[in-house]
Length: 255
Image (cartoon, rainbow, N blue to C red):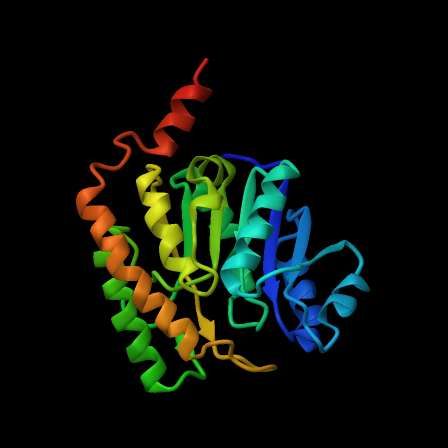
């Protein structure tokens, strides 16, 4: 069983003040081996950063510059790697992700480079408090992303992920352009091109309790603009790395 000495959990936020205390308490309860919880706040006017900073053991990165999920994720992941993280978990701040599977996601790095908390890998969809049309859009988008990126993942739109440091280093996060939620798709493409091995852990997704959804037409347009380009790059860009990062990690670890 692989062990990690510096586990980071990165959470992008915008107007999530009411969720800071219950979310961080759940993380500490379910996965005490997490070393650092990093809140990456995008200039929330509701005082999210201040609420997070008041919680013991939580670090806060207050972003400047262009706002967006992708910008926040890139900054948070890069900071974690720069500070020596050997595993990085990303999750949403809206209490929609099941914190009880955090240990299973970390354990999944024994057989993969990227482990995804998945709504769709257990047969039926694992969702609560979600309207039927959101589920339909999610499933349709997921199929399209799989075609365009080549990533063998059922839940391509999940932001609940556990990354190995080796994969994040190999991907070069600066080459990911998406500033919004299209970061989820583009990062899968680059992970596959880097030779990542993927795994999924069943995650019961619960619809948002506090705050408002960040999805809007601008975000949807960015996603639809990006996917054809990824498909073209997949077709014309040549073969991906043939030896997986996991295989390389195992061969390098042998005496």
